[in-house]
Length: 510
Ligand code: NAD
Image (cartoon, rainbow, N blue to C red):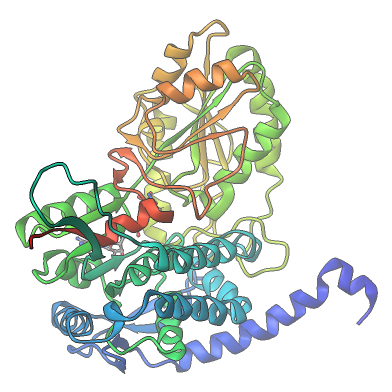
């Protein structure tokens, strides 16, 4: 191996290719099984689903198509493990140790997890290695640390009654974890870490389009010594397996990440069944506000990087850009140059900066929204047409001449599509915030300005679960979640953990 190879990363690329070939062989030999009560078994119906590589459309694995019968078995196993098993009663330090062991086991396999996620969900290896993997591991370890810090309180007594008042914080019970395909590894780990740290047992229903990392996480849970039934994995479609979990009368909490439409149906199912608790991390249409004193080069680079990250299939991606009129042309020029320079390829190909979209259906939906807005007078400065050939590629697309009623501005496209609209140089903070707030979503907002007074004023006026000022992303310890129709509840840290616990108040008389 030459020193030049080491510098350029050519060695890593060669190793990736060999490991990818081994991974493909392992996946094609993998039996389509569910994990229920510590055992791998086919779906009760025997049905299976194909999983494809979004870069080629070729089938890479078969999974079990679990349905209501399998959900019944998995929830029963999780309930037994919660009611009779050791998990909720273990000393918290032992639960923490097992979660740290799980994080170590995943970290030892991180090379393989990166390839698996890239093959399954389509994203570039670089983005998974720099984003999902370290963030997922930090989240799991952060929750492991919280396991020993969950506590009730003993409030001051305010009456003359003899005795003692206190409250306990107990695990909520059986948790259903239902996740999307755009960040399958990270979404499962974030929810699993919180549930297990709190002492809950779980049934994971990963997205049918990208379920493979969840199955491997389930395998590692058993390997590090989590008791049978604590972590169950039921693959299958949303309508068959997901809905059965949402309707199930013995699930205490459903922690869901996905679309607003499905979130709505889950909330209705929870209300219809047993009033189970819900945490809903839903869609977004995040505004980006570029003020007159912004560092334009940095802002343009970050806006492009974020919209091509996961091919625009990132819930918090800034997709509606509003820029002060005097900077409009200069920003468009930079955005177009940045988008045109993005290297598009299979996520696992050397040098890839943006992979394909997840499916033909998602790509067609994006195209339909773009076409609709073009027909209404928007212009594509770059992109705007799906790439022909194999795989579900869609180029970075920059739409200008847009108006606020257009579908490209209103709807979550979940593709690498930006709309850009100018606002008057003398617009007030209230007027700028009104542009940002002109959406029924409120997940994230991005703000580019070096004027602290403006920044603080806008932070106060923006309706959003998160405001990112001058670049950067979320962190495992920072609460994440939306307002308006972007969701219900928060994830991460002790704020996220509290959803996985119930409070029991005790009055202890003598
Ligand atoms: P989706 O809502 O179609 O599916 C999400 C999960 O729900 C999948 O596992 C699916 O099988 C299941 N499901 C589908 N129908 C169901 C039903 N009727 N009952 C129960 N479960 C059902 O979402 P998606 O297309 O997989 O993911 C994209 C969406 O996820 C986007 O809207 C994106 O914004 C959102 N998302 C949000 C966040 C966040 O943290 N707010 C993060 C990532 C993705």
